[in-house]
Image (cartoon, rainbow, N blue to C red; front, top):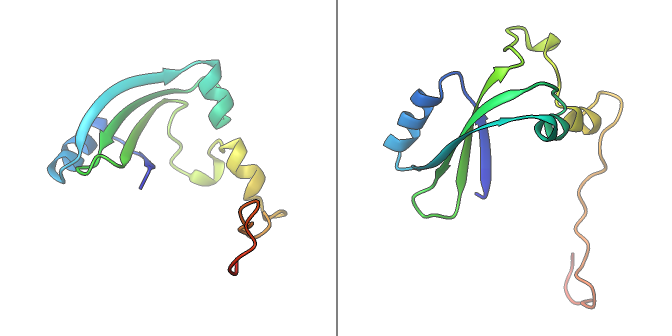
Length: 110
């Protein structure tokens, strides 16, 4: 595992839960501004995050609590992540993943 993100209602409760499982809190921060809006496709967002490290030190868990925009109970009308919406729309599916052989190597089946 490299990095997994989970959106939660209570950051403190989620931190406590994952700490009981052995993850260690690395830090907390507030994410907001133009840059974060461009990354997620949500303007005027304010997100409080906490980063937790797995016991082996190789993975990270990113816990997020959205303060703005407000949480929408009916997900069908929620703002969408514009990047994901482009690749997961009902009218377009990305081509299947194809692994290309490393350059200069022609041995083995890929």
